[in-house]
Image (cartoon, rainbow, N blue to C red; front, side, top):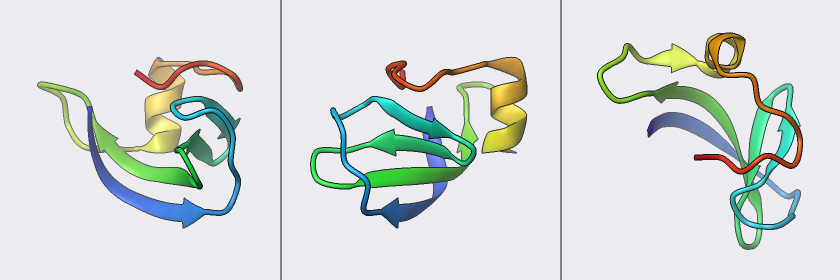
Length: 64
């Protein structure tokens, strides 16, 4: 997965864990990232809402 656009957020949880799906937010060691745009290998770049339509994630899931 290539991540193209993010916003830094102050929320903190276990690294790699999905902590929100609207917007798609993944915890890092100290803060978290709101993922705005990403790209799967061999696929087109897409916004996180489009990604979640085809790849549903829940809070607590591990981000690839």
